[in-house]
Length: 287
Image (cartoon, rainbow, N blue to C red):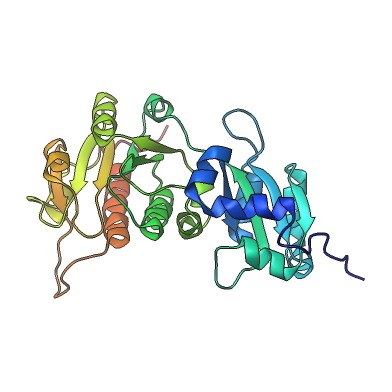
């Protein structure tokens, strides 16, 4: 027989503490955020330690059905040191920020990385989100950066909260895969990366340089940071001015433009391919 849920009231102290993490001010105060669904919880459990040596996943709320369906994930959560609570479906729905909860909601410690640590690692590919306000776009760009093999993502102080539930969901677990610095002024981000030997490319639909031309010229094989701007109006002139080049993704068909996440994927993968080509900064020389 299945175990009965221990949390059946949305007014319990544990549930109230979890539910308030849907709001940014409480996330910042507690330095905790919500990770919903099996993929996010699995990745959180696998990410065993934050910079201070503490486990990332602190608590897991699960329905009885989800605990049975995802028994392996619940086991991984317990092994990671998380407190697991069996909860009624109405309680999970109350904590969740999705329309159709999947029965698993984790509470995780903040895991952002100091910008200085990212610079010290001498990254070869970085995504800088400057003035990105939509959490879904921010999470999707993070996912694209992870897939392209970037070593880091930087969210400037003018961008959305990394731990917004929609951003966490859109990253589909990539939030737990690579270092992310938050709250860095864009000028500081650009200056620091330049000092670390990274070329700064600003992605802009009105850019003077064409991505295809950059690839043909062989200029993209070195360490690179792509700066992506606001979904509606792109990058401000002062940000474009401090980049080494302002690059547009060519539109070969009749589409007016690409959305932010799609453009980011194209740019990041172009750099990843160039860096792995002969003479690129990731080229492996046979021994």
